[in-house]
Image (cartoon, rainbow, N blue to C red; front, top):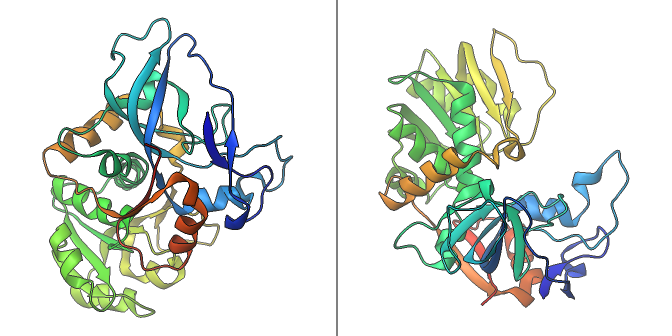
Length: 313
């Protein structure tokens, strides 16, 4: 079968079309014929070997991809939630023995797979789970009670946009940043207050919420510029890790999406929220799978709103 990956860590230009053997599903597993796979910054990190720092690099090939949509191709023993031909979405740990989503067929534990959102095409469906699950974990970890206020940086991005929408669904007030020209998008996602993005973001948030926010989800990876926006005893959720001090009783919550990719209940709830319109599936553009290098270069250029998707049809 066709796969897209690198034989050893490198950069986007090292991505190539590979021919890998098709695997049969074992107990509790599903084989999916992949139709679409989303291109995320985490996939670029994998290509460059960031996941293997401080340890041995496993034998390649290394296949990126954490998000996919497709149809059930085969079922292993003990799987009764699906039938062959069902449209599904899944979240993938690309460093596992299954490798990542950039392949025509993939075998995954059934708990990482849920039905595709009704009404969403393959490209849109593939964009949901990884970023939305990360957003869900960020809100769960911060545990801001209904009626509280959460700030979101990088709100126009996929993670940030999902935080905005999930926070509103949770009954929270949302303060979000936006660069010039994107405030309309961020308001459309549901933010109650939109402040300018930039080095003064903490001061801008404090101007809108003088007492400080209860929690802040840092999708812009600018923790040093945002801590002052959080009230004493508040919470910070970070998606890239952070080892700096947090004073004033602020609790820091590093979010690792790999910890929850088998939480079927969370995945299916996100699917339901995509179906009912709580979550907006945003596709920026699609590329044929063989043009994965060009897709990653577009992502690296920044400013992409919505997700880039590889088409495996």
